[in-house]
Length: 120
Image (cartoon, rainbow, N blue to C red; front, side):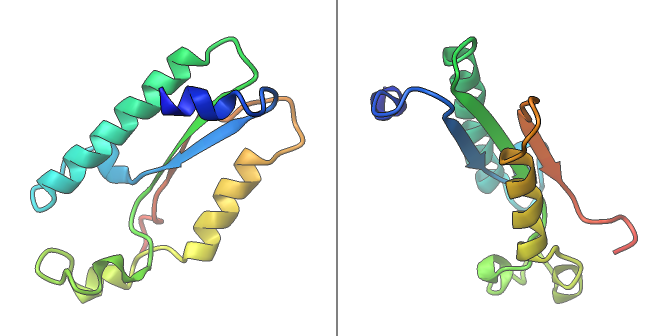
């Protein structure tokens, strides 16, 4: 396993953060192939958690939904501009991820689900 070989380089306090999409958590009628790939990534992430259980290696799955990037700019056929304007600021999403991954407490976050406020 490639991941295992890479981790032999440094064996303590390793955190693998796999940033996916909320599409890894639920289906979407307009994004079936995209969802399928994200479900595969989620399966890989969950498998890594099993492989490294009981070690100092921590695996964190991140599932953000609707980030305001160029990803959807040319995909107006299934994501309207109106909906795109409700998407999250990438800097805010990054701050949530970093603050959970690099914390000074003795807890480990294993999954981070980040969704837009319902009022947006």
